[in-house]
Length: 362
Image 1 (cartoon, rainbow, N blue to C red):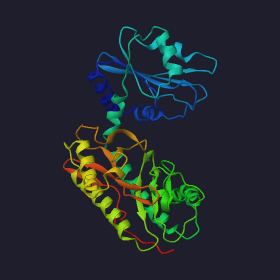
Image 2: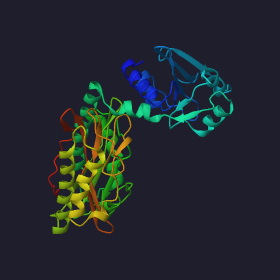
Image 3: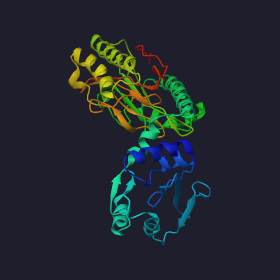
Image 4: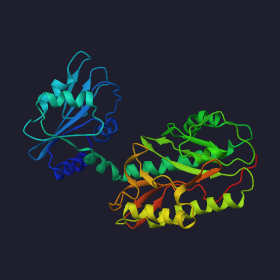
């Protein structure tokens, strides 16, 4: 059990008026215990309860899962023919509200409520989300390494830009390229777009073949020892037109203006505004169609986005993306994305692959 992380979670629960909670997100269970399994459709949860001046932890796991002995104070196992809800119900204190996380599915939550063992259920995901948001020293080191490997991955991707290659071919080669670099594969399904496809921010790679003159966008990430990277770059395969270069440089200025804003105490919404105002002033406001960024760590998208709706202040140890974009349907698009790690007096940009407009000869 990671005691410092557990203490942060329990402190957050206490601030929410909670003394017991059920954590079901497998990555959050790993974050607290060091034990991971993918439960699929089976029940899996870590129960936390304040017991005087200490926290009592119980892990509920199917006997089919890898051994979880030692992961929590106590381990409750069950088979496929047992009722795990009855076991959880017997552990809960019915006189206290029970915090649950957002991943507990209705197929387990509703039967648990029907037992009467937890009549007052409250959504408490933020207790763990907030703790995971502030990266410790080891986590910061792993995030840096993941982004360094992603920079190297972008160099590999630039070398794949050849006439006739398809989006799907590059996407299928990428996991092995990451493994060759020392990562464990993709942190998410890559977005690889040629030509007009870039105008779709979440285009899925297909059999489209690259033609000379196409613009190319890579939105990719790798994983390194559990932690995720994420970066986007846009390339040219012929000298850019005046309009293409104008859009590219507008997105670049927006990215760099936002990164320059990042420091403790600045609101996430103010960072979004810094980038969005650059794009609006250039006349492309309606074509920046998504939030500026998202937090990242064990998952590539973690709660606490960089958007106009998020009015909380940035804190040291948080890591999130800065990814403005302009998308012109039927023509082309540009996105430039980096990860930033908040420091005590500013931020560290984790990606070092150039922002300069690059023309790859094909």
